[in-house]
Length: 324
Image (cartoon, rainbow, N blue to C red; front, top):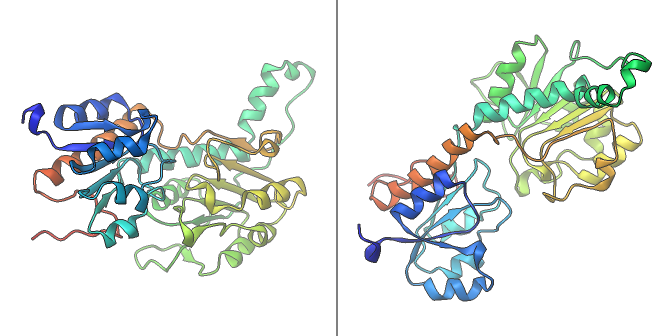
């Protein structure tokens, strides 16, 4: 395919070179985030662009973009979460949306276990204690333990199940809350998140974002979790009412939190940053070279498969695809 007849796509945000270079070799790519006047840039190509590569979770891909690109057929989004894409609106227009599931499952699940252990055993705090020379003055204070803890998983999808499998090795009781009971798992199901919080002392949230999960971990849930409670979140920041969490941590309503995601990334509340008894990470759940390359490859493969007439590889639930 020559440069003159390459299919044209828009890239909404930067992607790692591993994926971007493949896209530029296969398509004519318009890098929207580099444009000072994005509306004018879209207007100039609106009748030619047929695909979108969704780079950057904080760029909205919604009706405004769909209106600007009337020939759009497919949105290939980077990430298993796609709450930055209005998939329902896309579906109504016949636009297919894809994401990158499975390839990041193990990496995020590993990070969730690491974050849980770091929070329970205060590993970053102990590291800072040593570096500050305080060990010379005495041993680091005793911490809580994973022993005798009961873990409630919020969102038992692909990643949630991978987290649960890893937790089984720690010989801790595991239960879960989600939209519905899953017949193929042995863990106890709680239809009420508040009731689950009352029965556990540790919540691990792997829930996706969106209206249905917005602030489901709220003041009521945190109060039910109790003063020995720990919250770990590797799903989406919007699942937790961040201000309610801050107040619960200040009032010692719960013990601690380990957070890899936040409501308004990359802006993290100063009140959380000032707390020494929490563990905060800059959304690095899938952030290894290996996994990000796999995610980028799947983004590319979805676009290539679509424009080769083979359909999408990983369409999201809101835009299902049936082969003709």
